[in-house]
Amino acid sequence: MQAAILSEPNGRFHIENVTLDPPQDGEVLVKIAASGICRSDWRVAIGTAPKPMPIVTGHEGAGIVEAVGAGVSSVQAGDYVTLTWAPICGDCFYCQRGKANLCAAYRPAIASGLLDDGRARIHWQGEPVYILAGLGSFAEYAVVREASCVPIRRDLPLDVAALGGCAVATGVGAAMYTAGVSAGESVAVFGAGGIGLNILHGAQLCGAHPIIAVDASEAKTASAIQFGATHTLPSDESTVEQIQALTGGRGVDRAFEAVGIPELQEQAFAATRPGGTLTLVGTTPAGSSTNLPGAVITRTEKIVRGCSYGSVNPQRDIPLLLDLYGAGKLKLEALITRRYRLDQINEAYADLLSGALARGIIVF
Image 1 (cartoon, rainbow, N blue to C red):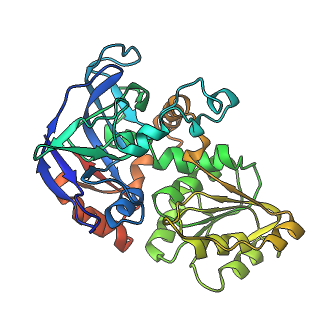
Image 2 (cartoon, helix red, strand yellow):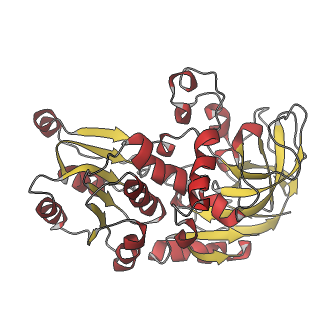
Image 3 (cartoon, rainbow, N blue to C red):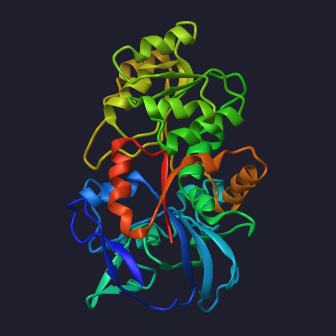
């Protein structure tokens, strides 16, 4: 099969013919139909999220089950699946306490870039190839854990279904589950890329008002309107003052940072009202730090919280979110700015970095 490989952190993918082992016990072979273009993969490509190499990245995929290994019972050949980079066991400390998104069972193996037996399934030039997030969906096929497969309806387009595995679950989940936005609350979302647009959409579903989108790109703030933003603002030195003007001088009830830039996180904190909540959704580069003043947090009772994968239970919530799309409640098709072939992956990331994409999709 063909796969997009990163062999060093130089920001360049190369397309190679690789071999793929069959699925072992508890594993599933998926023919990938589509995989989303996400900044998390780019951070691996440039080394700010260091991973072992060579590696096949891609963590937002969907496809059709081709074969299953021994012991697999939840899916069978022919099933449509969205892939999740946060598989759950259902039995660990976190799963038992309603925090399946923090499930600890698979994290060490996933971090290693290998499967549970400590081996790779992809091989290139006679050497093992690692996979990102237990998936590696920038390839024509992937062997993944059974728990990484979320069965979905067969009437859904698989390029749209791929978005459910990361951008939609993280963004909509951040508003609905992590922050628990209530009707009538004011919301500001810093960053109107793929994740930010989904946070806006989630806030709209929750009945928030006003919903303020903040981004340095005029094109992105313009597209935010169709995803629920009632106001758009540029990201500059006047942003906090303008948000306060829209909220009676207080700041917003709920602020979200969706990019992973420390300075933007600090600005979002300043735009949050006393007693309000800032939710950090974007992942900052390894080794960076954000300066949030402890004295201000104490005096104002502002709440700062993290958001991992929208606090979703993927097996429960990804099908639910895709049902909302099927019912016309989520505009997931509108998220896809452009579709690419696998051999156009470097062009896709150039477009992402230029601000030209809400979400790009590799279609196989």
